Length: 254
Image 1 (cartoon, helix red, strand yellow):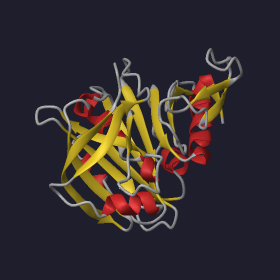
Image 2 (tube, rainbow, N blue to C red):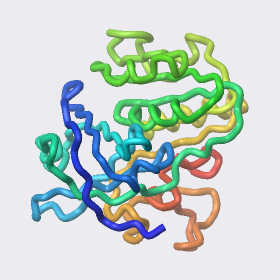
Image 3 (cartoon, rainbow, N blue to C red):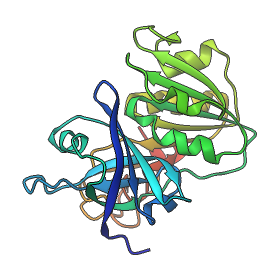
């Protein structure tokens, strides 16, 4: 499929938590995305040339809409947070390889921080039993979006809600078991998830968070260490934006 920059109409863009915004946009092509894919969002400010990669949170194919939930971290996302309904933004996507929807009886979905949004569409897509484990530093968001999609377990760093500690602590304390793990979040969390999957003897799919430049695999700015040599570079690297952002845990080193 030929991926090009295109316009998307903003349906809504509201703050849902401290520094976290919820945006719905209308675009037919991107509404056909798979769980775990992302888009590159372009700034209107000409001084910021590179787009901002943001995971697709949810899609509404019938109405040709898709949802982004993002955190304001710099000037680019700050600009995005000020866009009003009825305006348009330039986007490119859907990009990357998402989660493999394979047969399993009980899936464990793990999201940490801004790695939580892509788990919404995944939870809607998977047809098996699901336990959703959400990890927050303090402020909680999107937990209501998982209601009716599976059992929801929360972990917070400060213990203000759910288990005090990490998502791994919550899984261990609640004796959560399954036959497949799907996870998205910061690298330290994914490193712990990979180890947990090895201990449980089950496969894990990990969606890596990384600063991406081009978003299409051309610049080689976002790579991770892989077990096998990459056909593109002939070294033990994989491009997160192109071969990923989702990898099976056994394919990569963290």
